[in-house]
Image 1 (cartoon, one colour):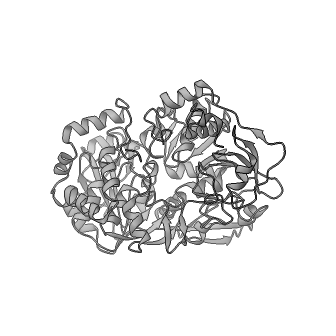
Image 2 (cartoon, chains in turn yellow, green; image 1 turned 180 degrees about the horizontal axis):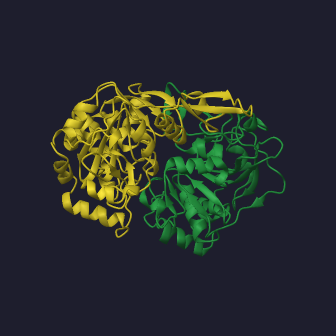
Image 3 (tube, one colour; image 1 turned 60 degrees about the vertical axis):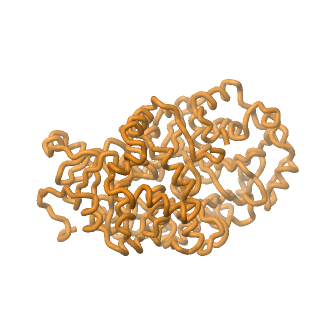
Length: 315
Length: 263
């Protein structure tokens, strides 16, 4: 971090295409910010698919739609799993499950959500490990990268969770300046830790704001510029995932993916339609229903529209 | 026989299990909840007998007044009118330090000591079915004082002699095993809820024991739907039934779209 992260205040804005080609390489260990279907840098996910990156390993830290698409597309072939291959309440993920069950995607290790975020914490702190009392006595622990030792102070068994340093992380934020000073108006989940332990960090943001706005309220800064390598402005860039306080999940698109991804052909046609046949995120949003859909998702976020669940079994 | 109220059409099985789950959560306690029925149970408790139930979500939501069923434990409803929208580090640290009275989890398989599998069916490296893994469940069950597990389909496939993978710790190999492994003493599984009854764990052996049969269910059914021998005492009680008010809250306020309760 001493040599690879610049302390210079410089304009880091670039396109999604540039960010992915410059900072994400075949074989990298990648990690996506947010949680599950919440505040996910989907523009980066689609661009990774579009640029046909291969042999990526991914942090399965409650990685849901993002990981499912990347595994389904053949970009990610190794996962360290805290929670993966599922869509939470929406059920299991057919595409990535199939890839694991047929051996096309390998589970490198098991872990838990807390253990994963403490891997990032150790990385952020520049320490080799964090001691903790989870994973003890279980197969999750046995299949993890952790090590149980005797606590040298009180003598009881304690689990040592090793530091993680992803090659690249991408995090979607509510706003940031051109240097990368970012505000997040929601739970930060583990993005404080992840942003600081990643070797390279791409921010995608709903909007780029003037540096003055950041400096007026510095207590709101969750990610400071000097850990950031690229800033990409992508309004609605979490779609079809939620952006807290802005727009809700697009359940129709998620349901479409869950339905068609039951077959490899379905995965191909979905990616052809939503990724390869479009050049920009705006074009993609047009396919998904454009401004009418966005306005609906905004109303839904503020509970002004009823819940729908088109992915339910009977549906 | 299935639960009497279900066959009579008074309520659905999931509505009943949500009610049973809620009844186990005491007011002025805290609960770390997982996706699905545990969320609904916590919401119902908060809206009925436990208005001061402190609900916590692993992604950082603390103390929400949940407006509707969250689809994810990370979405904005998980801190709707909450006291804090924090981080996973914050919530998991609080839990490890002892702030979680209950953890409320789902499961794919459970064994006699309450160990849970949500990772794989079959061998780990060549799975028949790959499941999502621990998520926050291993943490929740390692840190919380009392663990409640809900499993809506008790059978010989889900109540098994050995879970295919110990994702989440129950009492591990039995009495004293948690402490020996380094987990906090006095913690562990508290109740298991299935479509047949409510179970606790015998103090000495830490083996699963029936404490209450749902109305209309026989002890023989509990026995048949398990690979291992469940302790069945003579004086087993009958589980309570939801009131009209409980059902109205479940149907109109918590899950009007029938996302979980409609299944």
